[in-house]
Image (cartoon, rainbow, N blue to C red; front, side):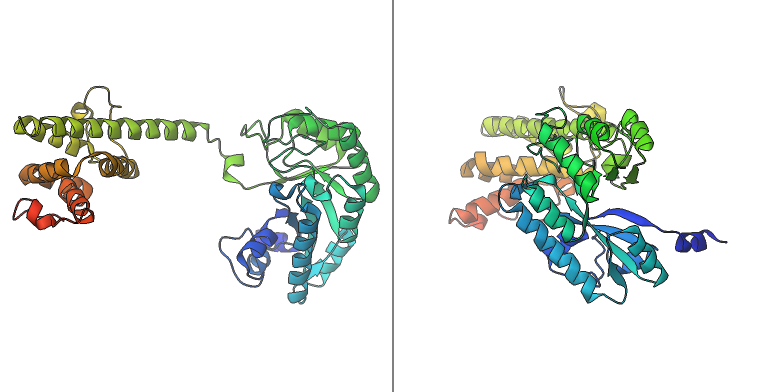
Length: 387
């Protein structure tokens, strides 16, 4: 038996699919291939998925603003998409339905409600969602609820409240999985203490491997195994790749961008200050500024106080954007005219190679034109303004 055969024969359950919310926002259908969606009919089929929990996701914005109505709206959409593709999909709400769909060559679609605020603190609303087919409830999303802390919000209760414990018991009684994805580690531990039924995490990973707040600590994983629960692994980059080193590099890169841009602006200000009395000094400032706008600056070329070493092309682009914004907002039109006249010969070619245009002449041209003046009359004759 090949790996592919084994995969096709197995029951493969996707614990969390956000496509319904994307359909709602983008106004397309499941049978229309969307390469940016988490799944569509084509990828579900090609991936050999037996069953997928479609998330009736309710953005935290709707907490106390019609969250239950929004959840029902997403469930309406899920039902409509299943009906539209009835030859290939079947709406199911238990394991027997999944097995029957597998035998019939269809993909089982299940419903999970993402965001405890969707029930509007009402067990009656929870039972309504169960009748609509919801078989798990994610207790929180990115923000706390009144009875549980989110993993990504400021802790308020440091676990479940008494109301939260009552909700867990009601979920057990109703036959709805308690989903601990998105909740804080303290809430996870409280849920495991209170729940008499297996719980799930519909999309999380291991905190010991990647210390992201959405991942699950080892003690909770061990307790969850004893509980008989399941963690559906999430292929979300930040959950499976430790991005701390990347973020540190990004912070350092942004610091380098700000420092280099500040140095270029200071050099241009120095040139502006001495341009009428010491043109050689002005030219030297412009030359140094030009060098800093290239992406091949060597440490020996960097002025004192600048982060050593060259920057990547995208970082240089950010430096140029900072400089151009500053020039547009601070340099007087008369100064631009004078600087434009200096941006010739070696200096202009240096700028042109680094920026793609002869920048001071180009900026001066645009500023003069906006001021209702003729750039060709105010700039020195014969200058090439564009590379």
